[in-house]
Structures are given as C-alpha cells and as structure tokens.
Length: 400
Image 1 (cartoon, rainbow, N blue to C red):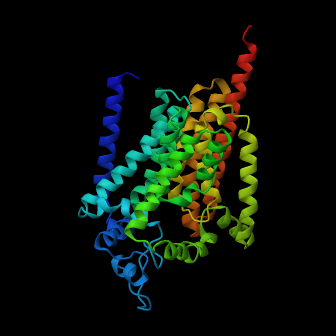
Image 2 (image 1 turned 180 degrees about the vertical axis):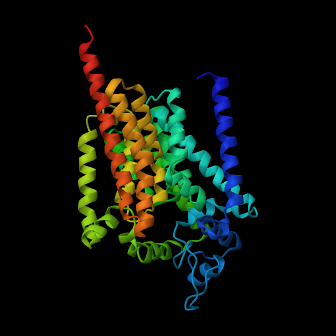
C-alpha cells in the first residue's frame, strides 16, 4: 500500500471512530452504563476519595446505600470498584470532560483501538493490505464490538494493545511489545494466559527486552497507583476474589460453562486445561512460535478468555487480533484451503458470536458463549500450524 493510501486509510479509521462515538453518545445515556463506573472511579481519584470504600462507591455511582431496599441499576454492580486503581488513574482525563463529550471520545478511542489492533495483527502475520477490509468489517460488525460500544466498556483498548504487542513482536521490538501488554493490565483478567505465556517465552529464549518491557510497564502502573492510594490492594482483592468470583458460574468462561453443564464450576479446570493442552499441541509446529510469536500472543489472548473466571461476551472483542490473523491466513491460502479458512473465519467471528448471544438472551445466561473463544483458539492454532507445514513442503520441493 502506498503512503498516500495508508494516510487515507488512517484518516478514514479515525473519522469513522469519531463518528461512532458521536452517534453512540447521542443514542445512549452512558451515565447508566459501564463507562460511568470507570469514569466514576476516576472522579473519586480526582477528589481524593476511595473507590474501594463501599458507601463512597455506592453514592458516587448513583446506587442506593446498602439496606435501602431500592432496585439497583445493571451497571456498577458490586460493593467496590472492580478494577485495579491504575485503571481509575488512567481514566482521569475522561473525568475532566462533561457528558456527552467524554462518552463520545471514550467510545471513539475504543473503536479506533479495536480496529487499529486488527490491522496490526493482520500485518503481524504477513496478511496483505487487500485483506484489511474483510478483517475490519468482521470486527466492526461483531457482537462484542457492538456491546462494547453500547456499554462503554474498555475492551476496544484491550484488543488494540494485544494487536500492538503482536505486531511489535513480529518486528523484533520486544520491549515495546512487553510494554503494550503491560498496559493491557487495565483489565488484568483478560491476560490470564497471555502475560505468563509471553514472560515464559522471553525467559526460555533469553529475550530479556520483552520481559523488561512487561515488568517496567507493569511496575509503573503499580507505582503510580500506590502513590495515589497505598492501601487499595486489599479491598480490591476482597472485591475480586469475593463477590465477583462468586458469579463466575454465570459467565461465558470454562467455569460458567462447567457449572451450566454439571452444576459444579470446578469442572471448568478440566475444560480449561484440556483446551490449553490441545491448542499447544496443535500449534507447536508453528515455526514462528519461537522466533516471532505474534500468533502465539493472539492464541494466548483467546485462551485467557476461556481460563479467566471473570469475563463477559463483550470481552470477546479481545479476539479481534485472532480473527485478523485468520483472515490473513485465508488471504494467502489457495483453492479449497482458502474457501475453508474464509468460511471458518466468518463463522467464528460473526455467525457464532451473534447466534450464541441470541441463545443467551433466550436463556438469560451467557455461559454457552465461551464457545466463541474456544473455537477461535482452535481455528487459529490449526491455521498457524497448517501454514507452517505448507512452508516446509514448499521448501523441500525446491531444487537444491
């Protein structure tokens, strides 16, 4: 793609994201959605108040005090802010702006990050620019993208950072890759597998810059949060390992799916372990997994959504890099393989998430939606390993 074409594409992405934010902020009252929970915590930080103090959190988020006997709105459920304090600190700029401008900018940022991360992931595994429109269309029309825009969640930024990390690793920029992944700790449960996997890879292959970027980025977030409020960790852990963990049986993860099937969420450990082993065995022939683990980052992100005890279907937007890599593999395949990969990608990224969301609305539970990251991880593992096998065959067929 020429330089003018890239500039035009970037301008279109930015303008489209801004338009999305403006339209969404006019159609939705984000004071009643998840965005207000994130912004509300930032307001408390600015005022020097504690977002992990239950009465303070209840008042700040517009919820009735405990025992008031009033109905509570759907967002901000929980006695305290459910994210690390560094997430609230990162949201401070959005606390300085009034509604609806602040909501419009937040939604625009998430849309731009998700689509930008999609493009970066596509290029990280050698996907051609001609495949970009399909990858972007699949993500923009996806169920988790729609829910993220509607709720004002943070998952677009998560997808962008995962895509950025994969792209940086593909270019050999290990420190930047680690830093991007550290910034994704804004929602740490989505890195349940990704963070440890990248750290283990960096240690095993003696690539200290990736580990250093991850450690420095995470250390800065931690230090800033401690400087703002040194005593936040205990109350936050109490919230995330208490009330929040108790609803894991209702969520679209291995734990929720296991509870739905057997009545015992503990069976989720078996499901998560079996899937992880299967994906690792399927993808271990991926030649790039050692030298350029861009595909491994997207695989780990997909597995994280299955393994974590707390994720909703809007969190599946973190699969955008994996979907982009599937599009990239399909675009360089030929014949029946190309058709099969394209069909699989459309099913995994579009038909399956929307169908399972319809099922969730009918059943009043999202547990079956765990099949979205399960199928995405399996499809990507197969495509990565298959591509490398084809490279080996072609290499052996060349004359000496």
